[in-house]
Length: 176
Image 1 (spheres, rainbow, N blue to C red):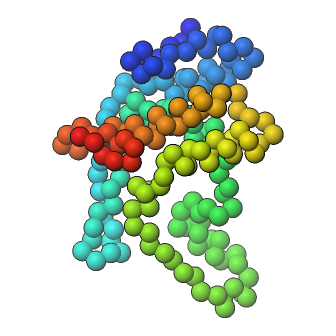
Image 2 (image 1 turned 90 degrees about the vertical axis):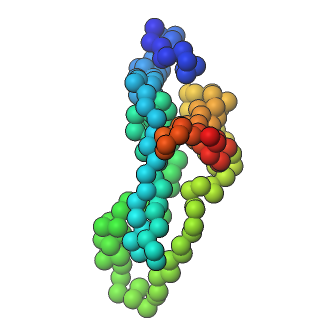
């Protein structure tokens, strides 16, 4: 029996999973918290803006839900349509170079969205993910829908971080 710390209510018996035992053992190996730390909030300067404001960054490395977030990310990789995503500025430039000359007649328009990630409606996003996983696919994941929903809620709405005091991002708000 492999179990996580009971304080995190993630205790499972991997040997009882049956034919998917190896997959589940790997999932729990990745997702079970080990020595947990609080996340760190820091800022990166937006050098392209006037007065150089800071972009807040929350590092979740080593937090209690970091491993679970990684495991869920691996499970959800094929949900993301990557055709409209750019990995980094270098790959973006490479993609622009492959466009035919006729595209020189067009203009690129960029939109600056302030506070994009903090304004993402988490409940709606979770429902979209669940619908994609369990209603639009021919093969649903082996994990039950309600369990997946609880895991997604846990990793998105319960992110502790340390910035002078301990805060928790909960329901889209920062609580002290």
